[in-house]
Image (cartoon, rainbow, N blue to C red; front, side, top):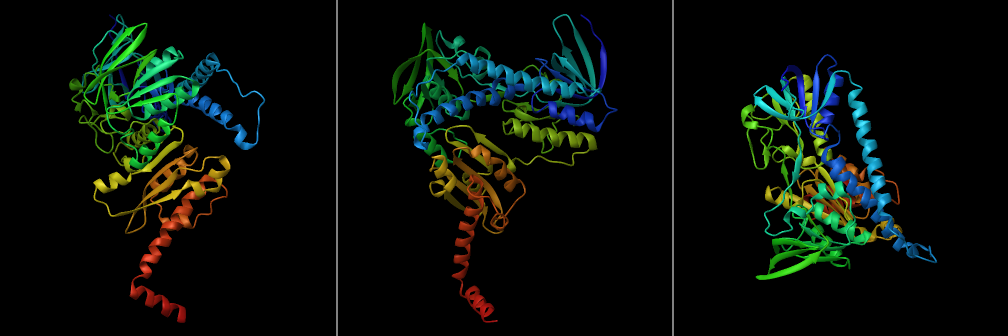
Length: 492
């Protein structure tokens, strides 16, 4: 065994969106500092790039093209032969090309900075300021650090099941590694990953069984939107919805037999493949956090609002941190916060999850920025809530999708917009504006004074603001004093 000792000003463990941006930004700000990024795969991109949001959206865009092909006649385009063939190998090749391009670009950017080292290895703590870096069983190094950022992400959670098929079930990681197209699949789960997989594969032609434990789906989504999405899923002839069900056993003999309890009865369904999408757990097992005096639990590493752990020289960002919203873009936001604080050597900047945003790339899309109506109620906030119906929207009618809604959660006192929910086709295209509105604490009047182009989906932001302010003004006019003052103002 080769043992050596090295010193770095900053060590980052994990090369995904929670770690790589910290390394790059801090290195640019501190050209005289020594930085090392340690990743078990030696590649940059993490779960999002290789097993999550990017490869799933590559499949999603293919599914979207198929849906558009099916509706061409509605737009005045008649094909003599509407038949198409799915070239799965081309989808796989496109996925590999895009992932390789994105990963290599990130690596080139990182390695162009001469004060960063990139190591392909597994890291674990020896004590509060020392890491053991394991390159392989024969070669290990010890690293002393001044500061450390843990950004090891999360992995799929697999519940305990009985049966001969348990070791053959897939998670999202298995699917994107193998990239085999199934004719039928049972998806266990009712969250965002499960819904996206179900819709995408169903559109591509896979027969889907979707099994959820509760009577509803998407527990973290606005309840009215989740209910509407369930209605959409039930209309898809390729998706079989099974709710209020608990999977007990998964057997395999040429095909999978999935045993589940529903309505106090034992039931069985079969499919070619099984994919588990029942949530994620933080990657903390191999880090030896106790030796570094870092407090953690099953939900992740405990941090303060500056992402600092119980060890003041160690920070945690992204999925591995307890309570951190599990999105790549939120991890990048956290990375910027960390890089700035590390540069200043003071925890001046704090993370604020109330301005987080996300998009579910379902059909239709669901997007969210800020807090939900349910969260506002839970906190006891005095808010007003209003909807805009996309059935009256010009752009929605032109696009052939005249349903869905935009929803505001607004502070009743100062009219600051605390939360925005959107459910419509291509909601992802306007989610960025929703994020800007919430992050900058814009008011209804700010949006009313904004001139949005027409016809676009984005003009719905100002239309809903006018709609809400109109009701607020009418309510104020019910006050005799205010009505009297307005009469005096007119007279003058």
